[in-house]
Amino acid sequence: MSESWDEYADTWDTNSEVIKYSEKAFDCISELIDLEGRDVLDFGCGTGLLTEKISNLASSVVAIDSSKKMIDILTEKKLENVNPFVCEITQESVKTIAAFHSKFDLIVASSVCAFLEDYDSTLIHLKSLLRPEGLFVQWDWKRVESDSEFGFTEDMIQQAYSNLDLKVIEIKSVFSIISEKGSMDVIMGMGKNA
Image (cartoon, rainbow, N blue to C red; front, side, top):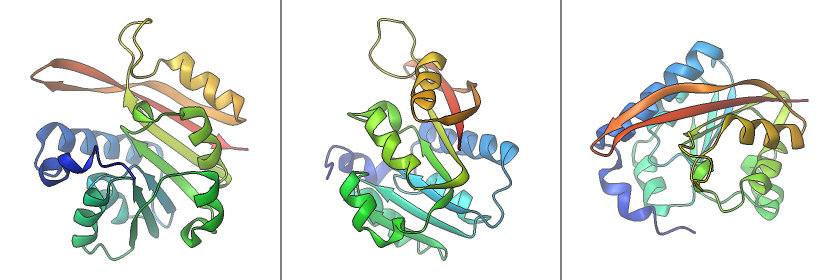
């Protein structure tokens, strides 16, 4: 499990940039999808800032993160219809974790995919957790320069979804986060399971 994110856990819920990111991601998803009655997987949920907002509308939310400290903070919130646990998405976890045996209407990944060691492999496992017609939505930092190794371009997301037969619903820049380091654009990708 990842201990690198544990060091951020105690201040995550008070970080103004993190709060703003989760609010804007929720605004995006709310405009695009009726969350009422949906079974949702929040992949890379952190302390659950987005999870909490989604849980107010969704039928159920499985919230997973590789950071034990982040999940501990989410668990302390005692959200009624949220099942939080420490987990990484692997072929083994998809097969063995009971919460994954029922498929999801929606999987969200907010500022997660750009940090993955193997985005394409993770997408394969996440797609296997979607119901037919289920949606996968990611928000990630937009790649600034073509030679940069961090973030995504629209073409990168398009190619990854096409490789998996996820029907592209929308890929676009959706908001910016302004911090001490300047302004960073966020790109959203939405794909539908065939």
